[in-house]
Image 1 (cartoon, helix red, strand yellow):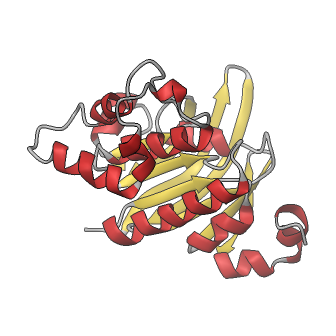
Image 2 (cartoon, one colour):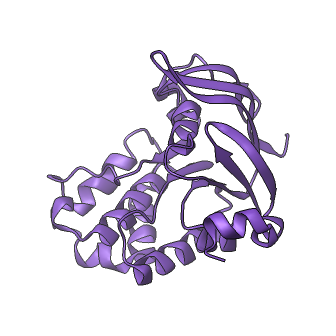
Length: 237
């Protein structure tokens, strides 16, 4: 089996007449955490949407060697790809527990309750609020729930879109520490779109920088941290 989990080659994506991605090439190896950096409007979110077949896309996108351009989003989910969108995407009227069960809707195995307990242990605030409506949770708690719900489908590839958006710094630090824990403990491959470059590069092995829908820079996390242009634009240096 190839070590390559995700491969984008010559990917273009558009919303109607508006082209957003231009000839994007990107790779993520199995078990790796890769970050995509860029300013607002650079095409980061569209990159994740292209992978999930949620936007008009041409070029090649392969997940574990299978071409997914042209597939339905539901087919991609069944390939054990989970997408945590910007804005969390929880079901506000449903309880915390019911949100987790929704995450497991496609599973047929007998380990669902075991995984409910596992992710409530990983995010203890969810256990405390298991009967509360998701819409009553704080922003940080909703983000925890969104990640736990995504993990309930036992993904091999987890796509995270701006997980730090709108959260307090102390919550963000805790959340990224947990992402690192999840990667180490489960081996889940992660592609993280993020503007908080400092924290993202701490858990990532490699990264890409997008500008105006194109990859303008790529390298190891260490290379990107030491790159003067990256430091000035994204690291506050």
